[in-house]
Amino acid sequence: MILFILGFASIANLMTDLLDRFPELPNKPFKCNMCSGFWYSILPAIVLYGLEGILISAITGMTSELLYRITNRI
Figure 1 (tube, rainbow, N blue to C red):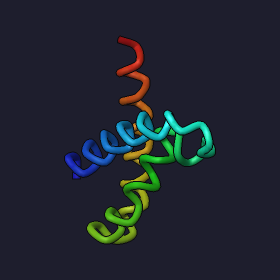
Figure 2 (cartoon, rainbow, N blue to C red):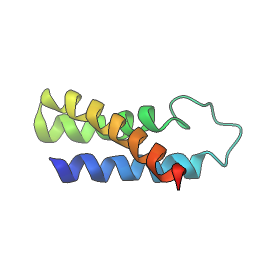
Figure 3 (cartoon, rainbow, N blue to C red):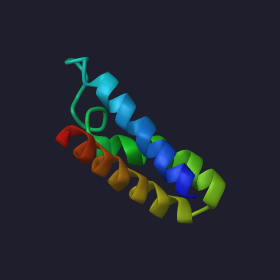
């Protein structure tokens, strides 16, 4: 479960950086790490973990935002 959260948080962080280069896309959910982390992981998390997957997706979104803030400090 920890690898799932860290993996999807990392994917969300990378995809948000990529989609940030397209100004025609709306800010939410495409350019927000927390939003994209949640939405990218919601379906796989529900399939793997059932209704607990909703909570796991929320944690993934928060982890993605933390990764973003940590990596932009350096």
